Image (cartoon, rainbow over all chains, first blue to last red; front, side, top):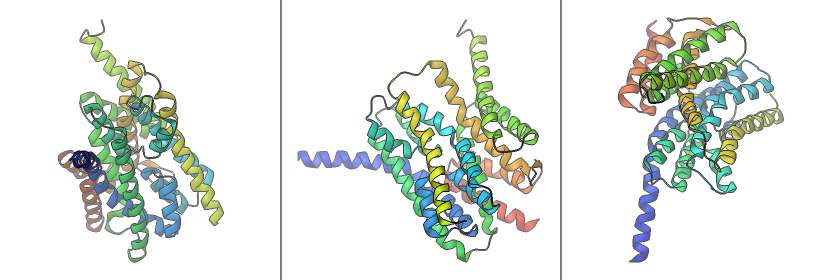
Length: 240
Length: 107
């Protein structure tokens, strides 16, 4: 009886992780598939695609890397762009760190591998609600990780049967960013921050060459949004 | 591109992706972050995603230039509405791709 109860408890525990990971997996399937097709068109074989998905595991920079490979960019500039695009995880991991106080180094180093925009968003909400176990968070990371790797390989295999530029596959990345952005617009302040950051990204990108404009515009936009928030709080007298 | 060169590339990409994910967990999991820092961090995702979206849909060509009314930006409007209404990443990606595909065939 005791074992039975333990089993039911653990089963419910795992089921919660699967329920939380499920929407991310549904998103990763078409996205990973689209990436696989584009990578195949850029001349990568299945092993290349699998290795990139396993070693890098970052959707947007994988898309960008494939685009740069097609235009014969130097490896070093691809690595630097990847660094800039993925610096945002620095901030996501910082937010998650609040909930992973005093965990072992081993756990943290495994957990870090699976921190993505999507797993971060889901796990942060769950941690804030409370009662979310670190292993449940890790399960969300790894379930979505396997889905990503699998769907990119599937896309890479199917790519040979699909013509370049068909079925709107070129738009998969934009649609993903649009959706992730819509999740973040939780109020007027976030909306303003988005406008400031987006507009400054355009302006900076037109003045300076290279890919550094994303990180500069984001830091500027976030700081402006933070300043606006503080200003609004002061006006309300909260910090007077 | 040679196989060894490709391997070096993805190992490099993997490292620069893993390090920013790992360092804060390693250093910050031990202590409390100041309140203002957490509030500032809260603004980062919206800022980055917006910078990525704007540069993705309003710029084109190489050297890049501003192109406000192009297929990518016009399709972004219904795609964004679908994202807001459905809150589904998979649904949004698939609808965005179909809309873009249709728009390109019609134009």
